[in-house]
Image (cartoon, rainbow, N blue to C red; front, side, top):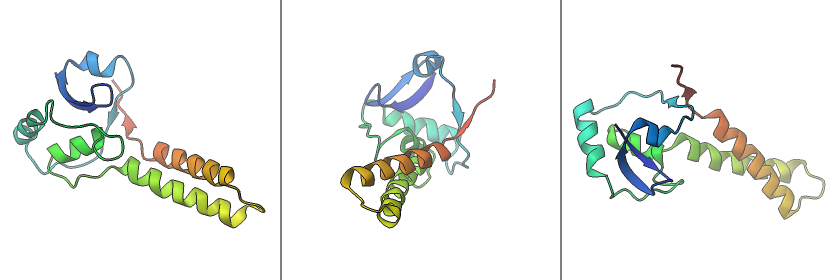
Length: 125
């Protein structure tokens, strides 16, 4: 069984591995938990049906960090915001005639690259 916070459910659920993964690649997050496995599971179970999923403030990375006793942050969200600011700034600095569309395109392009760069390593079977 797997306890996870997903956009699909909008909350935390305990489901089988196959229900959650659906054959897609899985990724290993590189961090050291503060809480023991027993404490982590107990805390995760308290959030079943309670956690309100949000990609920006309560996503799967936030959930794992919360349950393991770490600071509740998301590298992907932080990188996306920083990337968007950097992309828009680059457009402002480099574009001859910056427009709203150019700012938006620059922000989205660099934010997307930043998110991909922070993705966890794919788990090998």
